Amino acid sequence: MDPKHIHIDERLVDTGCVYCGCLLVDAIDLDRLRAEGPAGSLDEAVSRQRTRDHVPSRAFLDRPFPPNLPVVECCRSCNNGFSLDEQYLACLLECVVCGGVEPEFFERERVARMLRDSATLRERLASARRSFDGGTAWEMESERVSHVVVKLARGHAAFEHQRHYPAPDSISITPLVGMSEDERIRFESGGSGTRLLPEVGSRALTRAALTAGTSGWEDVQPGRYRYASTIYADGFSVRLVIREYLACEAWWNEPG
Image 1 (spheres, rainbow, N blue to C red):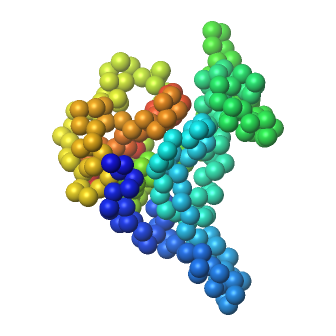
Image 2 (tube, helix red, strand yellow):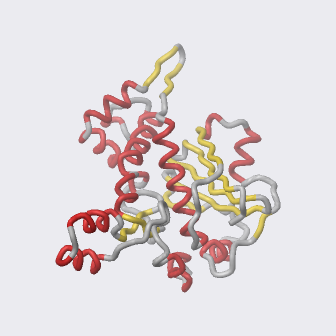
Image 3 (cartoon, rainbow, N blue to C red):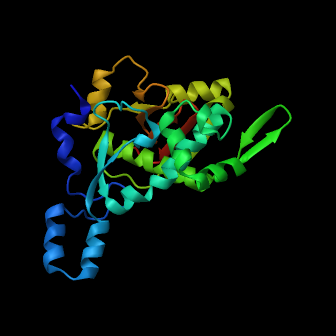
């Protein structure tokens, strides 16, 4: 059974954009406004047009894309509003992993094309590189990275639990290689807090039943992206790893 297609999939339909919460406008209503409504109302409606967003963004994945990628419904404005930051993060991680900004040395051809097509982004990433005796470091644009991580976490939370989540109460972003052994164990296992079962009828509960005895991680594409969501007695967590390098966790103080 594919958790994406179980019968409760409709619980988020017509409840608004999973990111900003605005009411979504369908294509048929846009056609009516084009024919009958004033220009101002049309412009606003276009920004709220119902679209579907992949979670994770395909910027973090390689072709051929995995089948049945998670999708959530959001407005056109939000869908478009994350694209540049997602592109930036995908390119930054490839630079870090491969050690430079030269696209010909990248492992991910999709990301190499991004940098070939954007001299501005390539220059920006080159300026973020810091060399020192014995190594190289990269200065991360924290606000842009946080913007993407919060979006991904909220998207996963909505997809797995069929409800809207506000911005998380806290997030952490760190390279896996920067973790101590204990930190890595805690991150991979999800910690030792009291865990609760997801709501009956949610994808998360179906997934838990189907993956009983496994690590709990959903490996969207090996080496590229994985995530896990866990409900505890004192809160809710979404963990994700991008490019098998950047470890991120979003935390909500309420279980949901």
